[in-house]
Image (tube, rainbow, N blue to C red; front, side, top):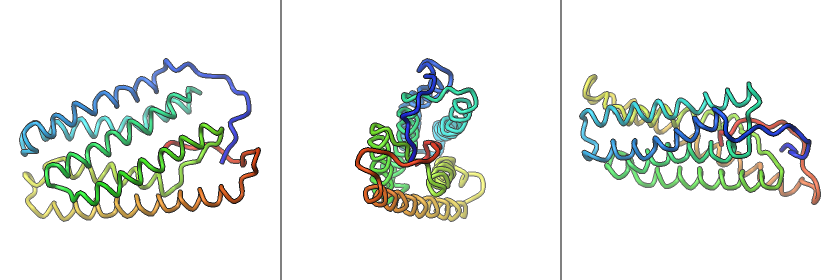
Length: 211
């Protein structure tokens, strides 16, 4: 945990990293439409949907890097960034389940974990506490991005049905890391509740927004 009480110069909300994040949010509905418009058929829309998702999710690291390097980290960015990520990844999982390409129970468990941990971190942020992203959370984010990208791109039309095994293994790894990192945060929340003084915060260094 890190205290945010120290006075630091405030960056304007109207900056490039936040603009990139907003564009990522706006791309989400376009991606959903492309994927579902022809019921997930392996045509041009499926390929374009995959491209839009990959480009959008790749910008996550870009806006964060620019914000940290140029001192443009804002409270608005801290709120919008996880919303954009969860909207894209969560929406992609829901779409895959609608198309019958991913079990609903997998999607539901991941969504419960993602929304729950994100809400908790925002609550802590409102209390002037930063919950640093864990290593497990960062690995989870990377694994989810890779697994969903593989599931979206119809590589089976190029390499054959054996590619489905690669997709399921990648999704399995992402699922395990998602659940495990969620447990890590629950343990952190329990420790915080026991150790945090009634009037203070615990020292630490703010980290990324990957939850």
